[in-house]
Amino acid sequence: MNQVFITSWKDLPAPLAGSVAAAEASFIESLPHSGGLPFKVSPYFASLAGPEPGDPIRRQFLPHPAEALPDPFALQDPLGEALHKASPRLIHQYPDRALLLAGGSCAGYCRYCFRRRWIGQPKGFIRGEELRPVLAYLKAHPGIREILISGGDPLVAADALLAGLFSALREARPGILLRICTRVPITQPGRLTGESIALLKAFRPLRMVIQSNHPRELAAPAQEVLRACVDQGIPVHVQTVLLRGINDTAAVLTALFRACLDLGLTPYYLFQLDLAPGTAHFRVPLKTGLALYREVKGRLSGLGLPVYAVDLPGGGGKIHLHEGVIAGEREEAGARVYLLQGPGGKLWPYPADTP
Ligand code: SF4
Image 1: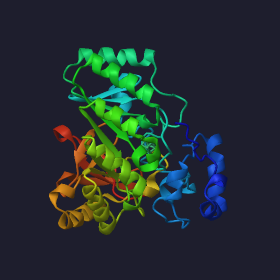
Image 2 (image 1 turned 120 degrees about the vertical axis):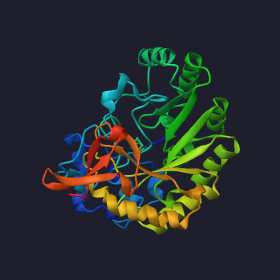
Image 3 (image 1 turned 90 degrees about the vertical axis):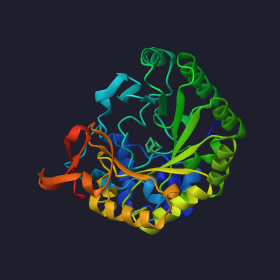
Image 4 (image 1 turned 90 degrees about the horizontal axis):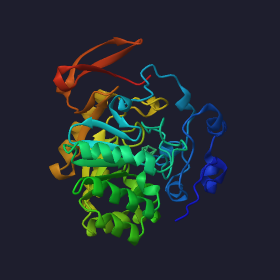
């Protein structure tokens, strides 16, 4: 399915294009020269946005000059994925699962994305010579029971490419769980035709992990494809990124998680923001996040409550967040950092506030 994406602010729907301030326009136009994350949004997702500068959908895809502000804590590879590369397309950090960087593009670029160094580059969908070492590694490591297929967003690829990839993975490792990490049901639901959903169903055991950050993203077209996936027996889990000014209130988060439950989706993780360059203006201070999570927990049943978590900056792995993980604090790079307790008791600094 050919989809035309919006890559110039001038092509946004009229009320939105008219709302782009001069500083935003010149920042967007500078991105191809500065090497910043390109601007790209699907016409569908743009249609969900309002023209107000603080609109929670608009802010997720419209580049803002704040991306150029210095952040002493920014890391080019915030999760330290390069430390765990088993092949150029495969990351193996945890014993029972591995991450495949299947594609290099998405149905729009989220301005807070932690993998912004990888996406938007002309890498394309994984090819035979890149897949061969992945398959060999999976065969040699039977302890890997789950393969996370990510990128970029794998579901922007054509069904035939997906079928080829899934078949190759299953041939190498029959029964391995396929975990599809995607934002397509939210940003480009029209991409998921009945045939696409049937393809996903044919490769069960397969789980879909989507990302949704605001209840307004769960508009009727998204609801329709997500219901269809659930009806076809495809479990759908939801990851949410905690974003300042977008979903950092108990009311918004509660509404989002309730809407997920109503659709038969499982709220899975609420993520504290990773320290990617150009994203500090989206960061919710950690203690604010903890207080918010406590409040949301008081409002929701366990079924609707995701786990609040962070990937320790620089490759420490994922930990669940609660007051007990803050083992201390100190000054670093002229700012306050909390020391978070990672696996084995190792301490990892995470900024206490935003720059
Ligand atoms: S869809 Fe995922 S990988 Fe793509 S830009 Fe958004 S957060 Fe990043």
